[in-house]
Image 1 (cartoon, one colour):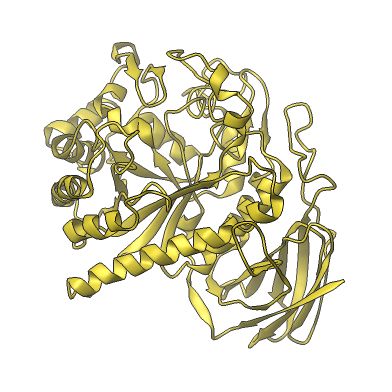
Image 2 (cartoon, rainbow, N blue to C red):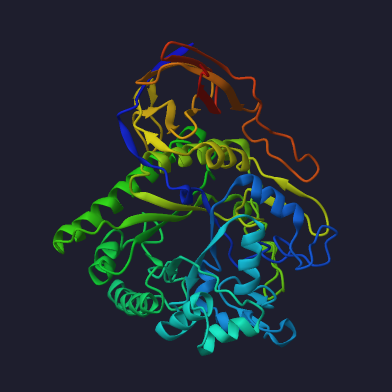
Length: 505
C-alpha cells in the first residue's frame, strides 16, 4: 500500500470560505429552464409551474447563489420580454442556442424560484446587443423600492417589495467570437465601465463582476483581463473565470490532473489583477468569481447535440451522462477552488439542471442525481469556516500534459463556530488504495464523526433514469484518530470526506 503524509496547522489559514463559492448557474439553454426547473403540467409542479422534485434536490445541494439568465443566451436577451402577463410575452428566435424562447420564465419568476430553492440570484446583464440603458433600467426594476417608472412597473406585476439582487455580471464571454456582440478588450472595457457606473448610481450596494476571458486557452488571455481591469478596476468587485474539461481520448490519469491547470489559471488571473492594482496604486482588492466550471464533452462526442433539431421550443442539448471519473475530477476542482478561497469568493458549477448538470429530469417523469452531484453536495454542506493550507508529501505520477501529479489531492476546512474539521481528499491512483497520515497541529480532542467514501468498481459507470442510484457514496470509510494524528485509508480512485468534531467534555 502506498503511503502519504499531510500536515494541517490551525494557524496556517488560506482564508475564509465565502459560501458563494458553492454557487451554480441556470441559463435559458436546452432543458435547463423549460422541463428542467419549470414544467407546469408535471405531476410535481407547484402553483407557479416549478417542479417540486427538482427544488428538493437543489435544496439538498445547499446552493447559495445561482447565476441567471446566461451565458451566451444573455447577449441577445431583452429582459423586458420576460415580465408582465405571460399571454402578452413575445416568442423570440434565440440565436445563441438556436431555439424558440417563449419567455414564460423571466426575472420575476426566477427570483420566486430562487426563494423556493433557498438561494439568491446573480443577475447577468446583456452587453452584446444592448448596454447601459437596459442595464440601469433592470437594476431599477429589480432593486428600487418604488415611485419611478420601472420600480412601479415591478409593483404592477405583483412584486411590491424590491428583489434586492446584490450580485450582477457585466455581460458574458465577450472575448469569444461566438458571442452575440463580441468585442475587443478595449470595447468591452469601455462599455463595462460606463454600465457599471450607472448601475451603481441606481444601487450603490450591488457588487459587479467583469467578464474575464472565456478560458485559459483564449489567444487574448491574460491580456484581456489586464485591459478590461485597466478600464474598470475602481468600479468592479470581481473578474469572472470560465473553464470546462473533457476526456475524449479516455486518458484518465491526465484527465483527473486537470485541476492543476485550473489552479494555474486562477494564479495567473490573481497575478494579472494585482498587476493592475499596483499600476493604479490602488488599495482596493478585486477578487475572482469562477462563475462557470465543470466537465463538458460527452453530449457532443456521443452525437446527442447534433440530433437536437434547431428552432424547436425545447432543444435537448449539452445533456451530459456523467461517469464516475468525472465525479473524481469535479472533486479535485472543488478542492482547487477551496485552496484559493482567499481570492476566489464566488464560483458557479455550470449548470444546475439538465444542461451540463448534477441534476437530470425526465419530462413528465422522475428527476435523478448525476454522479457529479455528490462531491458538490458534500463540499457545499460541510466545507465552511476557514480553509487550511495543506502541506502534502505524496507519491506522484506523470501524464501526457502534467508532471509530478500528486496521487493525493486534499484540502481541509475548520468551522470554529461548530468546532468541526472537514478533510476533503481524492486518491487519484487507479490501482491502489493509499494510507494517509493527516497531522492536525493545534487541534486537540477531536474525534471522527464519519468518513464518507465515493468509489466505483467501474470508472465509466454513471447514474441513469433506469438506475438512478447506480453509483452512490457510502459511510464505510476507514479513519481513526490518535491525539492529533488522523490515519485514513483512501480506496483507489475515490473521493473522501472525513468529518471530525471536538469531543464533548
